[in-house]
Length: 267
Ligand SMILES: [Zn+2]
Image (cartoon, rainbow, N blue to C red):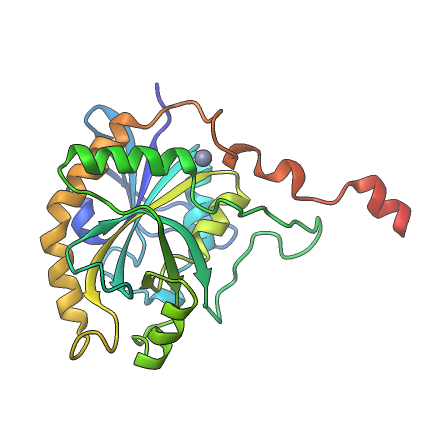
């Protein structure tokens, strides 16, 4: 039997997956209520990032419990979905993009599993799994959506939206989209040597680029986009290779920790 693939995302995505409901206990607290089932015959797990009833705001999501819980189920591959605002004016609401990099502007979240010894510096030269990004791009093309891939995401702390000046700054820094949930999720997955990529949908133009921002508008756009997003996800899950030989994610820890003998010699 193939290993399950996890989808982390909003409630619109849940509808493609039916199955057993389960909460996993972790050293960091319980996961949200997971749905464990299959999509087109392939085992899959859905994790509602903000909880079943969308009750955890982005800065309060227990990212460590979620990623640890998925690892505990034997999962090696995660596809995350994120609602984002467009900073790049070439993008427009309803578009789907596959981020290649991320700038982390969060402030209050615990961003690591390695809070003590052994000191661990994970490499994030390619923060998103390159193989998964290819599969997502091919799946988007197959669903008739051209998904831009050279996209940099800014992750802000939230829960408020950004100010126009902040958006201007993010644009100057080379960010194309902005969301509140990209970090530390992607980094935690790499720390546990899991493959992780995001498929993001543009729900609105960022502050200063449209009149006002409303959470309802984001939700409505999400519902509109969820049909095509679900199609891409189902296709990506069936196309995703079982082997992880052609990406760096599965061996991320092999060069991340200082050699013990060097540490001991220094003491
Ligand atoms: Zn990978």
